Length: 394
Image 1 (cartoon, one colour):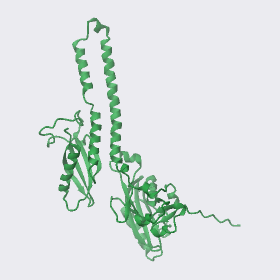
Image 2 (image 1 turned 180 degrees about the vertical axis):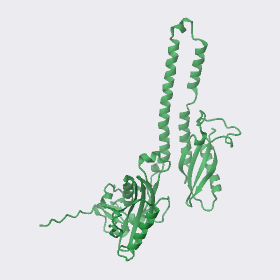
Image 3 (image 1 turned 30 degrees about the vertical axis):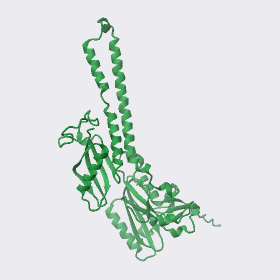
């Protein structure tokens, strides 16, 4: 007697268009694939799509120490999501692809996507040592088309030349492209096992998420401050114990009091304890700068350094308010703050005009003088990144 292998019941429905939701989703779970999701490495707006929370391309620990976190920007198709019953819970296939790549080792290319009788939609993600590197989407004819195999082979050749030495994988819900040969490894539906299906509103961008980067800067500053304050408190107790020891010395008491040298030592220690703690000023300044800059609409902080790296040896006045003099932010003074910010491209406004307006806003919101760093701007056609130097004087 031959035992037939029991076929597993589907756990969700793959949804690429609104027609697939007319009969409802399996177990009220819709896994959005293909054109149901707009994906880009740039923060772009797509008509008919609602933006969702950007996805980080590296793990949380790496994101803390990374200068710039690679991201994927995603948006859901309004026509698809509006066609779903209110009880429907959603997940995105692109999230599973991203998580799989971040767990991978070495150099890998993952080809996921969705196919029907007319078209094959491909999501192509590139990873290196568990870090997201690049993304492209491609549209090929349906599998039944005569020239499908040639089109896919040309695509693989193109990526093999562009990403030499990368191992190629293909993922569900695409069926295995056996024509491509054994060099392409297949990842089945288990790639989606760890996904959480949730109401669509829980996937949306929130104000708290947008404050994650400035918040992380403030938290790291507080951690630094607590460590530095602990050392200062230890120094204070050490000085106090030394003073009490000197006063209690029998020789000192026998001479009728404390000599002038000891008084001078005590004065110096008192001056040290009365000085403003530099670490406290740094944290306070960091918090004020981030709060002021975050009020400027459309601006994103790419990187901020306080003190600025060009200062060299860190002096006791960096981060501490100093009097504003006639040359407080002149060419001879080194900057206190090094700042990189990104803003959307504004029509026909030139880089210098936009940069000047930007520096005026930052200066008004933070109370510091700002100048453009040498060769301190880039323009990729969608956004402009400015490198600025700030001078604290109040």
